Length: 200
Image (cartoon, rainbow, N blue to C red):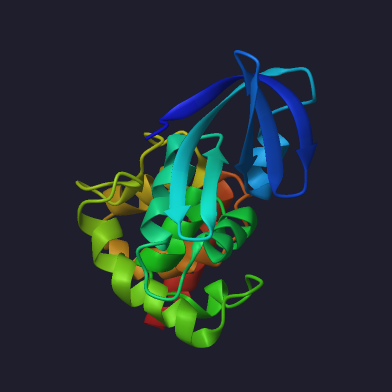
């Protein structure tokens, strides 16, 4: 098992990055997120990897972060979700956004991903929801927070709302529907507004 590859980025194109290590170029299938994060040709990069061995060949998949790799490995455990579909999901969704959508049961949002139909989206939610909330490394098992330790806006907003007394299952569907670029304060404000509307 190849845990990671580190070296010079010698080629990149949509869904593919080639990293040269000790004179050998490793072709890694990648998400758009990873492709945008690894820099330019000639840069030194490190990709965390997953090797897929099948009858028709061997493929290496590379990820800029362990969170993204963990999400990929979870996705390919779902019946009917292969590596290509998993890459498509993680090209559209960050690991934190994916975790929030699944944990909140929002299968409809997953159907917006190319190649993911209604049945596949529902299967992803059913198969992975409990794993994400209880034991998966993408979420902190004590509070359902993304493993970044509260450094991103979604984590901070969720943590603050839990402190305010809201239950995770109440606020996660609301947070999952917000733009990830919003500040934590704006996320909290919009969530509190929505919670107030629901209680009327």
